[in-house]
Length: 212
Length: 185
Image 1 (tube, rainbow over the protein chains, first blue to last red):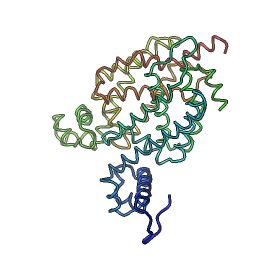
Image 2 (cartoon, one colour):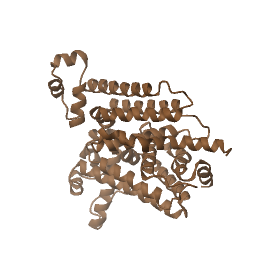
Image 3 (cartoon, rainbow over the protein chains, first blue to last red):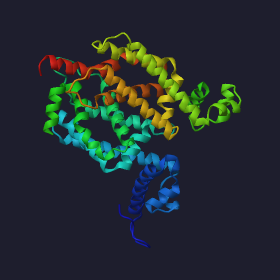
């Protein structure tokens, strides 16, 4: 992310604000990774972003508010990438596979952000639990919409899809905690199979995955 | 240990002070420090005690069920776990919610507990080559997420209501693999 030129640059206010905001959000995620939530201060975030403390407070009321904004943007960005991949796949099952692939690629590309979204989400008392829960629940429709009923049976209940999404999130957060963020892409076949099997059965699930 | 569970479940680990713990427990500060080096150690001891009891109940529930009766074993183990959550909502909250934000050592305890549940599932559920290697992790993670939400909603006392859907969730991949095997797929 480009820093602004030093001195008077004559760039429009909105551009400056947006640029600073983005740098602050990225800096926050990086500081969380390096120092943890309690160890991160406004001064650190500002320094990392190359933004003055007064400019920080123009953008955000507090560290907590900056964190919540970073969290919301992190989730929104992931969701958008997954939704786009699902939509462009041209079919439900390929969409699930492509969506999961896009998710893993996004997490691997931005490890500090991955850690923030997955690991901080369950920590009590920071106002993120509702966001984490909403994020996970938000993935359930991507799984259910357009899904077929398994041959000779009924579609799995929504509770199953919630548990599937929760199980995948749990696996990913535990691997991120274990320092394996760069390897998340390796889990695609297994988690895609886990997601598709309740609908397609394992054999068909594996066939679809092998073709993507 | 009961006091630390009650207080951290109610107010969070951060806000709970040694003074609160000794007052709630009705013991002298000296007594606490004779037995523990500080707040964290009390918390970790309470966590370990609760986890050990959960494992004990699960193992007792499966005792006497043969290896072939894997559906019954999984169902019994889940029932024992959910029954414990329902019976001890304060401990459930401490272990499944507070431990994740107390201290790094507490987070490690949680992670180790999850790993042991994963291994226990692997021991009690049948093995099928075709299932993903991570199936136990995703199943335990899924159960943990559903139970976590229930505790968060302050409905831990009704955790046993989750038994039918969570049993179906845990058994489905194994039943599917078994059926596929019988069909010669």
